[in-house]
Image 1 (spheres, rainbow, N blue to C red):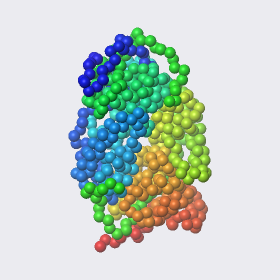
Image 2 (tube, one colour):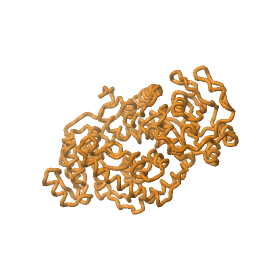
Image 3 (cartoon, rainbow, N blue to C red):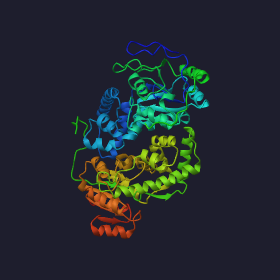
Image 4 (tube, helix red, strand yellow):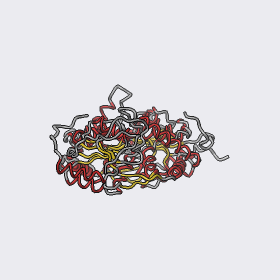
Length: 561
């Protein structure tokens, strides 16, 4: 039912028509609308235990109690930042690495922050489910069913530390299938009350904000975002934050309800009696101080190991059906947003888009501008512009939003991976001898590589992992090497790097200042090229097997005193 407001929040317009205009799209916030949450008091202790365990692979000793204090302080500071950001008209979202390194782990030593921040997305995904339990709010299943049965397209528009976790929660509760698009702040780089999040969702659903209803639970983020975006109807469903905005808000909603259940009747009435309105012609395009959390005491020079993934840890058998399998996902997405395409159209788009991607890489490698020469393709550009170039504009908008998920799907589908003989043994030998192992890899999905390493049973043994899609620069660019090196307490001169490509790994590792660069036979580049790189000084060793690296590392270990 509708309800009066407390004095801390503005009142809804009493002169709104009894029947709201029929929506073409229904956009919902995640927390406070689709789900309510129950806080879990043990979250910081549980997450600290996970990070303490993770730190062992980094060769760093952390105190769980002090780590828990840092997490709690960081979350408090993050909450203050979010409240302040809500005052801005077009706030950007913090990156996962900023949230982890600058807020949650700000009290840790620099090397620990840098190394753990490379796993920021996974850390925040874990944190999202540890912080609170999620419960579907009353009326949501019925609301979604009524919308879908009446061709009202559905989308999620939500600020989130981990859209990845939100997607999984929706899947677990059987709700993901209703939504044509899910727009999360950590995935698009802006956060409400930035109107761009609603603009993107409406565009991907083939409508305009004025033909949509937006349902949220906060005034400073949701109502403000809805009004700035020009949404036709702005609705509030009360939750614990509704009546306590961090500052006075002048924007008001059209309707304030106790639960989403109360919205079902309004939707039924709008569908039965409301004016559908005109069809839109086209969517518009719219070094902190160490406070006692210390690593183990520094000793004599001790080597660390950085490995390439493909060709060194993993050998893959190509999957000839990969583009068709990804095309099927595009067909499904297109159907859900009401812009259907055939599997032939989708597969052709993937085929041609991947060739454009390869051409773009060659073009960038030849650029004179060193600052952008090795820039990695952004998932939104890959899927919306390169793959989606000849697809309907509405679908292109959805592909931009779903880019990271599609990159993960392509990574999973492109080949059958298997550990290269000797690679798992090398990683486990390093763990036994306290040699930190990190990853430096060009990939479209670092998350996909992490999944492979977990299947091999060595994911927990990997230290700083720098993946080009997460860093934004690919090898031979030095930034991706530097990101991994920043997570080590080892001098770059004492680091051994192993790759299989002359340019990306040999020259790239050398230009990054790594002390020992090894190239491995049996990968992508032929033996003749590897031997030439060795002769030219672009590599220190050419090896036959990952097991050969053990002998190299063993000779460098400082004997126990």
